[in-house]
Image (cartoon, rainbow, N blue to C red; front, side):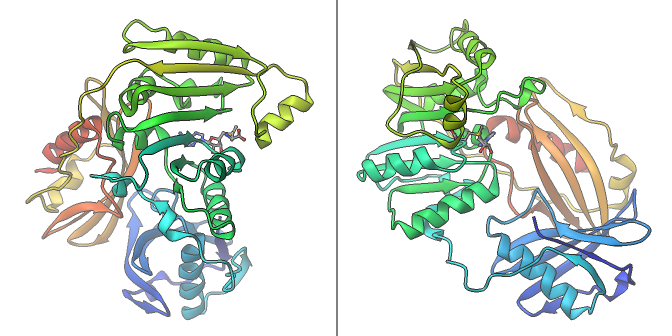
Length: 392
Ligand SMILES: C[S@@+](CC[C@H](N)C(=O)[O-])C[C@H]1O[C@@H](n2cnc3c(N)ncnc32)[C@H](O)[C@@H]1O
């Protein structure tokens, strides 16, 4: 990901201003370290850059939480700021490729696009964690009258598939660069025919990061139409048994289960090819939904109403997680923008799929910088508690 290392400089030269196509919105200091954060806007996308200071050189890099999918925007922001301020660059991996194929933007969707979403095709399938996209592209090319929503958390993989969509003029794929566990909660009930989860990361040491979990299964069953199918394919014996345990759980909605071993598919993904070479066993587990699910209401309001920044807020904020029944919030960093404005970095939501966000607070308003949390009931409950907490 884009970054440069520079010789230390006087950061008071960084000012709210336009640096070529980059609008610098604000600069803020971390109250617990010497690090600084810079808010920028490039081509209508607002995101943050971090300035990490060490003794010899400083690192100016993208911020993971607010990064835009088009990595060129981050490169442009870093490039424009460092060039305009004449920073002494020690090292750089910024090579803006101006001639790069424009990403197939109309096929790139954000989570906000799923609020009251309407699909351009009657039949919709989801692929969770498509990686190199081989299976997703194959399915889309072979089923031109179906929509395939590919959800991938890894930005370069999402970009690579968007490039393929452009090159191959594919019209029936939507790419979402997000955590599939959260995005699924935004999908309407009874809207999908298949949810493919092929070779998910087993996360043996961090099971809370696994895609398959009781709540993911619940959401999948809600999102699937009656007779729609969740399709897990894995090479991990442990993950296979773990998933079976989840799928056979006590409170699973009405469904049927099918298991297959070493069944070949028409298309072999990159990961599968690796395991086949090693002659590993491959397991398929299909869970078919046997019921219609109630409609989900997404009418959650993530605004802060009249909550504004007051000095007392800083006295109150603790760095300890604040826990509730099934959800939490945790202020991780506080950045001072000015006497009357701060930026809070926090984690919120459910324990197994928390979200990171920033909250901007000044003396006239407060809001989530970049975008609000995903509209899930758990996030909303956390938001209400955050609002209560910040209302000093
Ligand atoms: C082992 S790879 C398999 C990729 C592909 N399905 C294949 O068979 O080649 C797992 C993929 O899932 C993605 N992934 C992991 N957790 C995810 C999540 N919560 N939401 C979306 N994608 C995720 C990873 O970035 C990675 O690309």
